[in-house]
Length: 342
Image: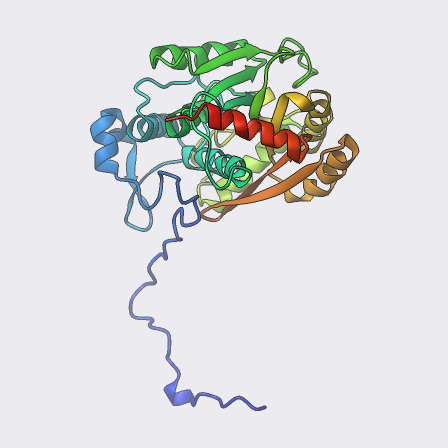
């Protein structure tokens, strides 16, 4: 069938009299529905709660208030303002050059894990201290436990190998009076993730993990350079941070990169499979999923799923798996019912 063509005289010609305006990308449109960071940031409100943020606010190319995400100081103070305004965290700081993650994306992981628990609990999210969560490699920032406890009142144990990160996270916990809700434990063997960490009597409803994504410092640096170019920040006259969100070696890279770390995590999870209802980990590279699925099958996981997440134009995902039979999962649900949270 021939499609009628629009006469040339009726075609709209481009307007060359006025310069084209920057088209603003849709911002945070795909965050989880319960994520508190929907829509635009209210900078006047954030500055009111955290006055030091004012000096970092800029006007972006779209004429909107923002911050310079290429500035580590700006990102750190911005996170401090978000955690204070949205989660009541009065005191938050991290050492220089430690990972300073974007809070909205971290919140999404927490909310989708809540949905995972609800999917096996008649759609009801279990809340309160009865729900125990292990944050593998919590880091200095302590962001996952802060969000998870604030929104769901879950109890957290954070594991970490770095003494400086442990000290920083402990300072955040203590200064906010969260000692009963969030605990920290050092993994003494840098070659192990879960093994040698848990007490035999401990049980966790969830584990979560933000694994080191890269296989070397060089790979991490190249990734940051690509991001600066994509954001239009790669100005040769400007000294940019080597790593876009900071981070120490164990936070960003390990031998074999993400695929090797996650497959080791899966292998170790099988050895403590009866102590955890659902294991999970972020996976930054979709190309690693086939190897991860193979590792899950080899480990004997009874169920697994990949949960896709999207923050604006950024795509991410996490993989969750369990070694619990349906009957065993029912026992966990009954325990939640006996200890309902508030």
